[in-house]
Length: 167
Image (cartoon, rainbow, N blue to C red):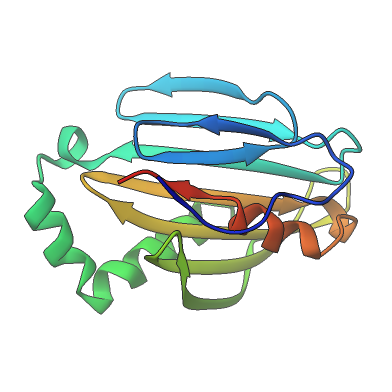
């Protein structure tokens, strides 16, 4: 097992959860899990309601009939990543504003980082950071929602540092 990063040092209660046979993600409590068709989602709100963590896994083989090799070849194309970015931003609604996008590594994998701002129905502006990567035939999206910008900025980095990959 390859373990990346230090333990989460925040006073929040962090609970590691194996979301599948390949990844363990830490949540600020026990997340709810839903599975619909080819998509599995884990959602958890922090105890102080300052942030949410959402992790989604999409089975691309079941969804599109692609093989590991086909998916890997697609991930080498700039237009595939651009499409992923546009799809995520548009899924956040008409009021979502793209702030930045870049490539980073999460658990040693090429990852598209997307930062947006989106006003909520309650009038606050949420800062949403999405991390999209592919492993095997699955597409992963780890989403950190900073509710109204109230969460400590270091939580995002601690959350990512605690992502564990089992090869």
